[in-house]
Length: 218
Image (cartoon, rainbow, N blue to C red; front, side, top):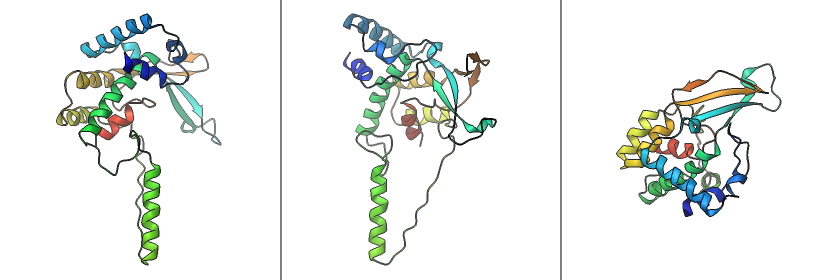
């Protein structure tokens, strides 16, 4: 119950999915209502089977600043998914990150997407290297790589194989496998919806657990 309450408190209202259930509604739940929700979440966890509605996203295209509205590449796709699954994602993600941190599976140089760490550490690190090299009249060489569509191109089977090799099995592995399987999207422009498409690969954009999946797959 505490995990559920922590997950709900760690939210702020954003656009909901197709069911129109907002985070603020969860925050008004009584303890009895939360118990029913927790019972359902536990059932999903033990069955390792998510409702299909939880794996469906509405894609809302948002025009990038200064871009041509007639060019499809000028739009940033915003995925709107049910907040029910987002609450459970937070609970699962907290457990997964705890396990990875406890067993030191992350490289010490990884700063992004980690608890009590942030990318500012790398900025300070390179700044320190530059200053030391400057004093010694040496050179500092930096290589910066931008992985295009990193989440979209994540190899799902490879992630599951890597998780199993790290000792992640049981409900966690089964839940992640189903979470990434049979996902669907539908584009919405104004009040018009496109046909439904099946996502063959990758981990969902905007999902709190996607960065953890991405780091785990390395």
